[in-house]
Length: 377
Ligand SMILES: Cc1ncc(COP(=O)(O)O)c(C=O)c1O
Image (cartoon, rainbow, N blue to C red; front, side):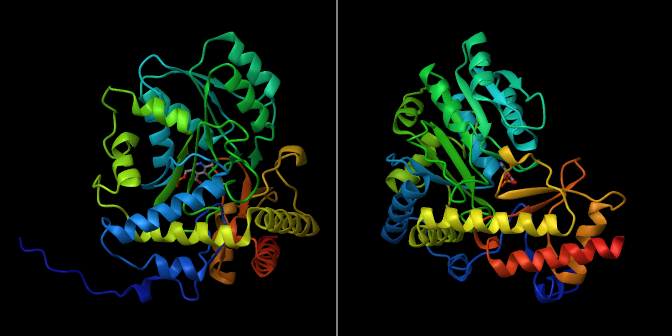
C-alpha cells in the first residue's frame, strides 16, 4: 500500500490564537531574547560554539554560585540532568538516602533503583519539609554514599527550608549531596558552593526562562574529578558525563548538540546576570507574595504551611465541588491563561518563575481564576 501525505494543516491553524499565558508549573513564558535565540541553528562544533559555551559556563557559575567550571547542558528534560547525576554516582550496591517529598524527589529513588543502588527513602511525618535533625539521625543509622533531595518539590508546593543544614551534615559524613534545583535556581538563593552541594541541576523551562528540552547541570570540581576517575562503563551513553565533557569542556563531538536550546540557555542566563540574582530573588518574592495575597482575597487557601511554602510554584487548595481539570480547561478557553493541576492531590498550582513574576501576569491569572471559580459555583 502506498502511503500518501496527510491533508496539510499549517501550525497557525493548530496553535491557540491568542497564545496562552503559561502560569503553571512550567514551561514558563519566554522573553523576546530567548525567542530569537531559540530559532537559530548553526554548526555545533567550531569557534562560535566554543565562545558561546565558555560564556554560558561563566554565567552558569554566577547563577549556580559556584567556582566550579564543570557546568554542562543536556539535550533533554530536567529529568535527563537528574539521570546524568544519578548515573555518575550510583552503581550496584551504592547506598542512597532519598528524601521523598513527592513526585520529583521520588524520581531520584526510581532512578537509583534502576542503577542497582541500595535505596532508603525518608518521608516526612506530616505535610512539611525535612528537618536536618531527622536527616542526620537517618544518616547515622547506616553508611550512605549519596543523599538526594529536591529544593522545591513542585508536586505539592513544599520547599526544603533546611537544605543548607542537611547538605552540611551530609557532607561532614562524606555523603555526596545531589540537589534538584529545577524550580528554585535563579528564583531564590541556592548557593551551590556555600551550601556544599556536589551536583545540582535545573531545566530550561523553569526559572531560567529558556525553553523545554534543554537542561543545565553543575558538578563540584571534587565530585567531577572522582567521576572522571571512574573506569567502569556508564549505563548511559548520551548521559555519561565523561563523554559529555568532550563537548562541554573540549569542544569535540559527543552528539550533535541542541544548538537552539544552548542559545536559549545562553540568553536566559544572560538576562539573569543583567538583572542580578539579588534583584531577581526580590522580584520573585514580591510577586509570589502578591499572588498569595490575591488568592486569599478570593477565598482560596494555600496547601503548604507558610513555614515551608514554595514561593516559585504555589499550591492552592481547590474549592469543594469543582473539578480542577474542568476549571483549568475553562480558564484556557475563556481567559487564555493556563495553570497546573496536580498529581493526585486536590490542588491547583500557579508558577512564579522568571517571566511569570510580572504584575500584569499575576493580576491576569487572579482575575481568570476568580471568574473561573465563579463560573463553576
Ligand atoms: C522539581 C522538579 N524536578 C524535576 C522535574 C522534571 O523536569 P522535566 O519534566 O523537564 O524532566 C520537574 C518538572 O516539573 C520538577 O518540577
